[in-house]
Image (tube, rainbow, N blue to C red; front, side, top):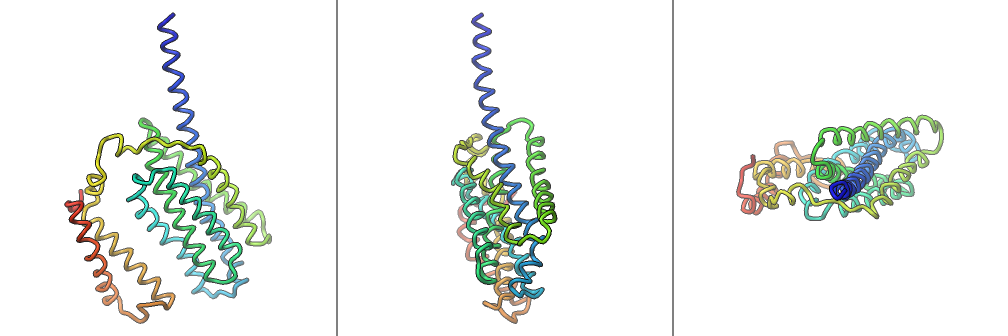
Length: 275
């Protein structure tokens, strides 16, 4: 009898842990749906936005591009600090980016509000990706591949949902189509309030932050810094803010300057070429 009670007592915490993990998983899933929804809805309404604000193909390209390249920067940049900030704070940052950017897009009076709103939502999307992948890997010590595959079905589902909703609404105002992102956004935002994430795998394994960065190493950091710098220079040149008329060789040479300046302290810290 005592053995049965002991077994039951051990099973209950395990069931509670599984329930908590699944709650966190579905919150991450909905956050990814929100990310995909923003991509799909933006692609569906770009023509309506261009018509209202009088944008030519160049400006349309800038808007669509602003929804892409900051996404990569958000992933790479936030991946470096998510262990320090924690998964919950990371998703709060993503939620803030999603909410503020959507308001900027919906109520912005001119192109630049749309541009920076689109840029901000892309950063938020990158933060979501930087958080949910290691978070789900930490939640499920076994069956990681299964749960990560299910998680990323949220991307395809969000793209499909956003596209179908935009098509179904037909000639409805584009702001209505974009504003529907608030539905999954608010859901994962409320779920986040009571979320309690476990420590990351790095922390549980006793691996230091420096040791983690040593995996990327000087070479990896140099490539990231150089490519990000070059892309920012391209954006500035396209917008007419700086570097206008520069040849590619000059742009590449100039991009080496911040790369070298930043890689010196990074190299002194990680002391590894990468693995």
